[in-house]
Length: 121
Image 1 (cartoon, rainbow, N blue to C red):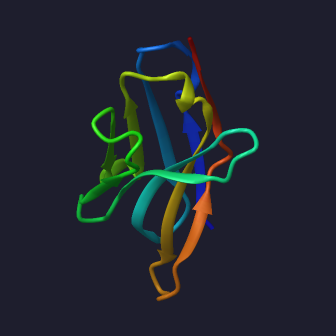
Image 2 (cartoon, rainbow, N blue to C red):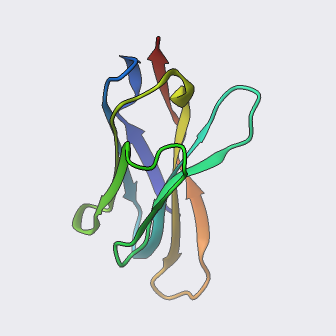
């Protein structure tokens, strides 16, 4: 099993910045893609940004140019730097990791518990 612990959420004003962190822990596993999703009340969970094991990134159109995803493989950590935040970015943000045990070929998706981001206007 892989456990994910997120941090960095909070309340920020329109135009402000926040950085989310997510640390993955467990024994003898390999991490492939790492990503951030978000879910606002009454909406479906949506992909915000993803970074592959090779460092390639992709973003939702609504955050392109404002958010930056990065990862530190040595620390099994993924970050999401959010700049120029808008009220519509308000949501619970979830860390997601695609990983497998070292002796297995089967990948599983793991989710963090979520961290609230609130942007006030």
